[in-house]
Image (tube, rainbow, N blue to C red):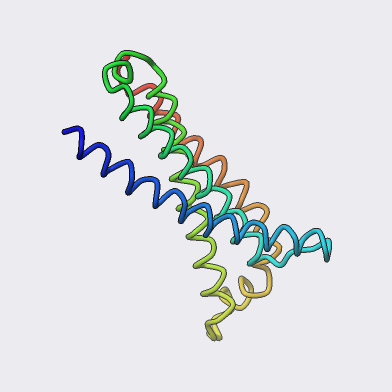
Length: 153
């Protein structure tokens, strides 16, 4: 079983490094653009938020798995796994929301429909993004709160 743990940690490390490069590059490019121009497009804000949430999600998964691999007995006896589980649930849900908003944003901007509601949404999608983001943060928190109480102590 020990070689399987080492192989698993190596694969996890490769995924971790790939995520750092992928999300880190996206965050750095968008933040440098924000510093340079003092403004980001709606799409860049969504991409940056998605990059930050997946960046922290990957860190949580990596730390959790390292902690479990190094001490599985201690991991099962302490309450730290509950915190990792809740944080994982929150960040995973939040990342899914941001990916959904990115898809909706692209769909609204690219598609051509003459339906009045769609045209209204197309004109106002950029202005609605702050409310959609705050709603995503709150809905993710509310949907993950029961997971903190469901887990047996």
